[in-house]
Image (cartoon, rainbow, N blue to C red; front, side, top):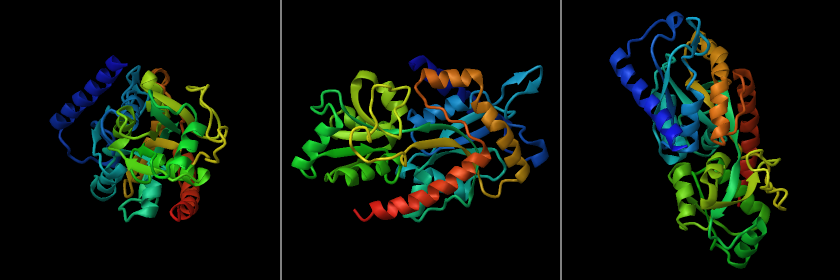
Length: 332
C-alpha cells in the first residue's frame, strides 16, 4: 500500500515539473489538450479524495498504436484544502482558468450542501461535470479500544450521557456531517460534532481517542484495518468491501444514503463547449481503464462510473433532496 501511494505521489510531482517546463500558454479549443492537465483537490494529500484522484487519472495519457485511448495528456493533482472543501472550490469557481487545463475533483453531497447553507462562489449552475469515478459511503467508527462494539452500545451511552459523545467528521456540511446530523435526529441522542482537518484529520481524532466516535469514508476506514472498529455503514445496503458490517438501518437507525460521497471531475462554467465535450467523451473511459479499476479495488476504493449526463441528473436530484433534508436537520 505504501509503495503504491509513493508511486502515485511521484507521478504527480513529475508531471507538475513538466508543466512548469512547458509553460501555460493558451491554445485554441481545437488543439486541446496539448499539455498536462491539473486536477485541483479541495482536501489534504493522503485523504480518500486525493488518493483516489491520483489513481483515477493514471490512464489519462494511455496510448495504443500511437493513438490516445483516453484524455490525451497526463494529469497532475494540486491540493487546496481548507474549510471542508470550501477554500478550494471557491478558488476554482472564481479564479481557475476556463480553458480545460485546470479541472477539479468534486464531492457530492459536500459542495452542493455547502452552497445551500453558506454563501459560496460555487453551486450546480457554475460548474460543469465531465464524469464520476466513485461513490464512497460514510461509516460510523470508534477507536480500536473503545467500549462500544455496536451502534446500540454507542446510542445507549449517548442517551445516558447527553452531550458527552463527541463525533468527528471531515468538515461542516460534508457527507460525514450530514450522516452525523441524520444519526442524531434518528436516535434522539445529544451528540457533539467535531470537524477535523479533512478525512485524515477526522480519522486521526478517532484513532487518538480525541473523539469517542466519528463518521468517515468507507474507503479510508477499510484501509485503517485494526486501528479502528467500524460499527455501521450509512447506505441502503451493505458494501462488498465490508460484508460483515451492517447498515445503520439494519442497526435500527433510520439513516439513508444521503451522505454517500460521489466523486468525479469537473471544469468551471464558461469552459469552451468543445473542451467539455472532449472531456465528457474521454474521462469516463479513463476511469474504466482495467489497471485503474484494479488499483481501486486493491485499495478498497468504491467505483461508480457515470457519464456527464448521468452526473448532471444526479446533481439536480441531490440539490432538491439536500435542500429539503438540510431544512429539516438545521432545525435540530
